[in-house]
Length: 273
Image 1 (cartoon, rainbow, N blue to C red):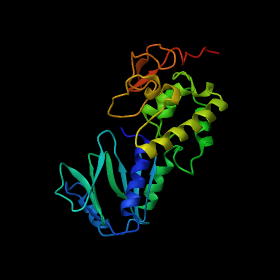
Image 2: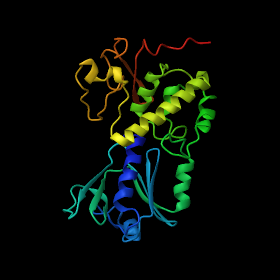
Image 3: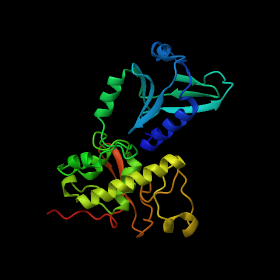
């Protein structure tokens, strides 16, 4: 599933392509046809992302909400546009480009009030200027759930997925099973600041890179990582491979129906109080 930096990057791209101009909106697949007709030809006022949700604002009474889920994706190409390929849920045609959306979990037309209600249910997004890390800390600091669970809870922190979760915990040497209530405020402040830095870099580069310069393959001579997610990482999808810091094989376990990756040496299990 795309993580928050991908949605913020899409919001930027769509803003550059369409904002302030009339947009042709259709649903070649047919599942979004009625809603598409209501915004077709209207001016896209602004775009924004909150966590893993994308919002296209056509006015106070018309907001297109998209959640990509596991299989959703956008594609874009310059005009003239060819015939839609595959099951295109929504097609947007502007002055220079066409953007197609395929396979999303959600593509729906909302009022501004309905869009605000979705955002109100989401936690602090490290990529938003209005993010409130104290609100997230209030939830984390009193929770007995593992910090690995809390970081993936979109009602606590919006936009963090499996990659950022694993990598941020490694970078701060935090045991993924540490209860939220056992995390110190100092650890939380450092973790939040790091998520902001890492995710902003993800927006700029379009990939997730988390390794320090001294562990970069160009410096160490190791082979670059080859993975569809791209980027150089410490633990994500490196189960059984040596830790880039200490050499211990990276561990993997299922955690809340997702794969969890960590280094048993760099992230030792917390000793119960």
